[in-house]
Length: 213
Ligand SMILES: Cc1cc2nc3c(=O)[nH]c(=O)nc-3n(C[C@H](O)[C@H](O)[C@H](O)COP(=O)(O)O)c2cc1C
Image 1 (tube, rainbow, N blue to C red):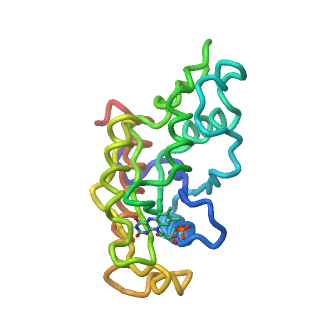
Image 2 (image 1 turned 60 degrees about the horizontal axis):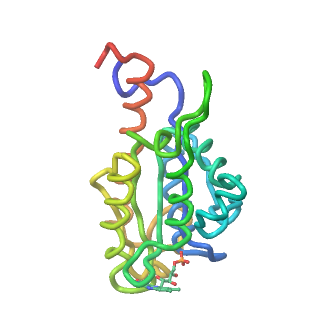
């Protein structure tokens, strides 16, 4: 089977690492999701704020077990083939919301027994992720992206595609729900989304027909 004819649509998660209503990163990842859907992908939006989890606290986990939100995130990653992620840059770092959510995911252990889900990082391993950032500033959040790249590739074994987009003056770029205002930036987003969808399709095709590789 070729990588282009997987028998089911690829499933992607779309996550904005902002907790703000009207978030620029939320708008950017929503645009990326629409572009992925136009390529045939199914997309599930995840609002990290809605996941039930405290600020990371080992004592809390000892008393209560892993939080429901972390288990839900593990289920979501297990059920999807890749990720579209847009994170604001807070003082040159990714947001606490993103790191807290994924730190919790990283400590979820594998479920015992046949058919049990793998541990948190077992559900992310090998899956493609496309990185975006949006900022009203001139740098577009580009300083945080290498950190997110290292975090996801090193500790979550994700395949971070080479294409990425840091969107400067994002408030001026996100005026049309179908495209970014500057054509070259919109084309860069197209390339990023296509790369994630292609990698996810390849993974699905491999899983369906491993001997064809
Ligand atoms: C604590 C904090 C730190 C910030 N640091 C940066 C920064 O380092 N670089 C940047 O471009 N914008 C920075 N900003 C501005 C954000 O880019 C801006 O608030 C943006 O709208 C956040 O993304 P959102 O619209 O998706 O919520 C910072 C904002 C906050 C609240």
